[in-house]
Length: 194
Image (cartoon, rainbow, N blue to C red; front, side):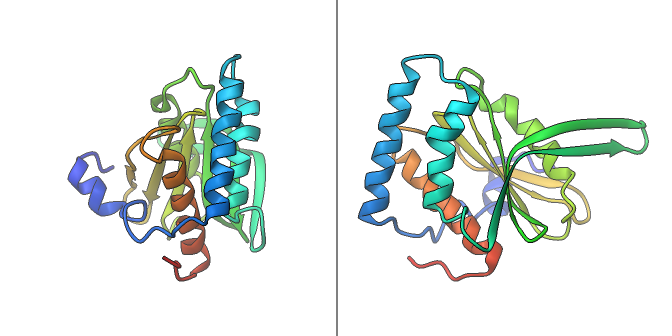
């Protein structure tokens, strides 16, 4: 697995360059998402509420609810470690697919949990993907913080993560949408409109 920052930046360039521009309508919708999150944050923001208020609007804006994409929730996965005879079972929060190809695996946590809690869980689920010959992408979110993951399994598993994006800081929500749009375009082989 890749751990150095430089190697990570070189391995996972998809989140860093050639991101699509957002329209005025998309920016306005993101402002509403941010306002909804701020309203909900005043109370205890539960995982399912956060999925409705933040994850669903972002997936919609990125076009990931429309064909050729298919969204599945609470997908059960099982990972077996042959040597140790260990089985790990879990449920992916949201899985975006094109046919049987995993485009994006989303792990969401309650807002008080660090993203570091979700990253190993997301990577273990990504290792269970039936598609092992192409890069897999993950998105870990706790409501206000987001990080993207890239995993390539081929010869030996390698992964990298993006920088952490924060809702309400440095256009974190806008960049998150731009990255989601780009990953969707990569999955279907579309050119990115800049």
